[in-house]
Length: 363
Image (tube, rainbow, N blue to C red):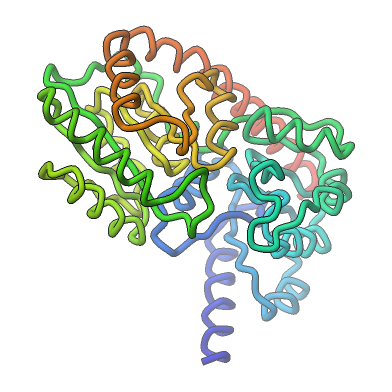
């Protein structure tokens, strides 16, 4: 099995190299190939952001070392999206490996894990200081949000800026003024976290069930969005607790399908980061159920931090009242979304053009 797996990784890497253009950039991010919509959307977004570069998915695997040395390609690497900085040690090791053979490296939209949440969980330790040298070697560092920027500045990383989540590239400004149908629709999202959230998964499921029940009583249609197969079980449990027949929309790989499904939603309340990021990309006013600090980091980046609620903070009834308030002022909320998102979308385009020009001169 080991040899077969090695050969599969090598074949995939060679295929990517052969099918991409110069300048080739190793994509050292995400959890691709596991039907997790957030990670798949991040890679698709980077392809939109860097259309003149060849993105090569970079699998973390020992067999690729000699192969990279022989091919001398890709010549550059990017860590793009995900809350990877200060995360698992393996992400730093992979990025350092990329830097060893790359001419240039850069960060485009990754987040920084927050010690305020992670300290003491599962043996996690804060090792931002270990990341600092790798980040200082990057010719550009753009992070997801203001909290990520602050966490880097605290350990002396200079020159970074807030670039926003890369998935913002999936938004279509031309569809900003599209209105949902007359019948109100509530979009909900919940998922598994291995217990790593503010509060507990069971308590959150109870709150979401109460919210769905109140929405149904008020005549709203309720749609449950699932973005990873492992989230389906807890979604079905929340539906059962609500006593309301639930409509499940499961999208695991194609962000464009998700955007079309969520676009007709009046208000969205989601827990998984990119379930909610994509809802905002469809210009749907969204309440972020902040299960970890990364969720507020995104909402603060687009000026929506007032709609980020910790998952241990409000009951289902209070969340429903918040939903009604957002729905009553929906047009204003859409305009606020645009005011926060459009400048970041333009900044991403500007920085991507500058980075691409730099890479072309070095290829």
